[in-house]
Image (cartoon, rainbow over all chains, first blue to last red; front, side, top):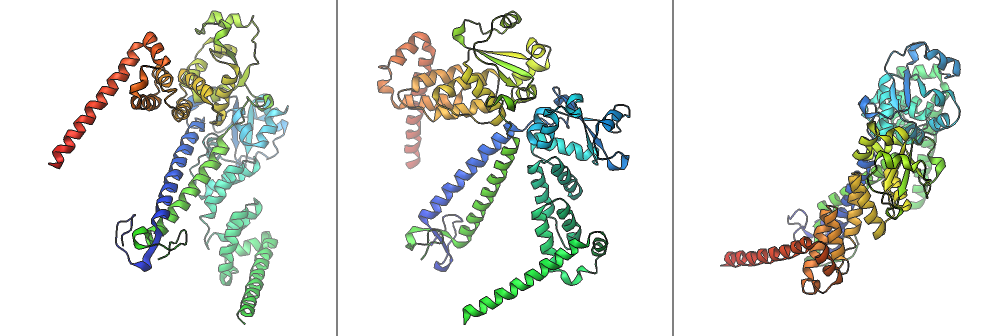
Length: 260
Length: 260
């Protein structure tokens, strides 16, 4: 008989669906495609012009964000004295313009900062510590567009920033990207990173890779460093490994019992 | 043989697809569903809290929009003198708060108004003429959420407003809704409305319904009204009808030639 989809002949043992189900599936596919079209058009409408791309796109900006990289010697405290000092010390990189309504709607941390009588709300100047200018720009760009151009370092830096300002959507977006890059070479580093930033999906993915390569784990340089720095994390890897072994053994036993 | 989708038996003449195509289609469906999930989550992120639902949701509002219904006697000119007068006459309905950055990004008309030194930009007060308070609220709500609860009168009023302020996405959204409601009873009204507001999809849909009911067209009250008010529109209906008849006849002739 003939396949209605690829138009080729096939034998009975290669049969897929009946005509009715084929037609239903085609309709479903069309419906899903229409829904995607509709969602894309709504996204395009809701997407805002990013003030990071073009200063002229931010004529109503009521905030200026300054990136203070960790190497600049500034602390991460963000207190009023430091804020006052910033008006004297010229920032090394240009400020990134933004709008209160956008930052407040995307981040509960910015919302609290801007809706209470805090220094940042009064001055309209927010200093973002321990971050490079490029990462800050990407962060602000995401707030307006829900889009980011990622590589691994950018995804890690943005995840940290997203966690700090509680931008859940961006954190999940970065975590998904990093998770897709986990391999045997970087699994220890990603495992430790995921631990520090409560990234559950990344933690599970890197733990899974580590457990598949337990025989070479202790030879790795990153392993030795982590033993020095945070041995509890190493303990957790061993615990997870042992747990899995016990479960696998129990599974086999049950399997054996069932077969008896 | 057995259908892999509904699990029921079927005969050869009811065959749909081969196994390979069935599996490919299932994968495609899964992919489309994942894409929908992703788009929905991005939409949820980009959607802004509507200032029309809760005044507390608009703490950084820098605009106030006033609905001036056409029955209030105000003109539709929006000139400076009328704007000045508004500060004396208290508005009858509450103002709708909004943000410059949002209105400017959704509408080129608001953008021009707010980015040039116009009265509205200076005062932060925009009067929206010939519109009810409810329609204005729905209009502003859409600017923040890309969502509107429509019935036919609301869709018509919003379409007019969307056309005036060049909010293409909202205009298309309303037009699609009204088009889905076209029937023999309202086709003349919708046809005239579509003409006035350059709504091509609605125009074609109502014209199509009208042409299917040409024999009763001239008996309708709305027809007689339109002949009085704008006879050119009636002429266009007849022209389209004649055109279709000629094309159908030509099609039949070609059909005959081909068969010879």
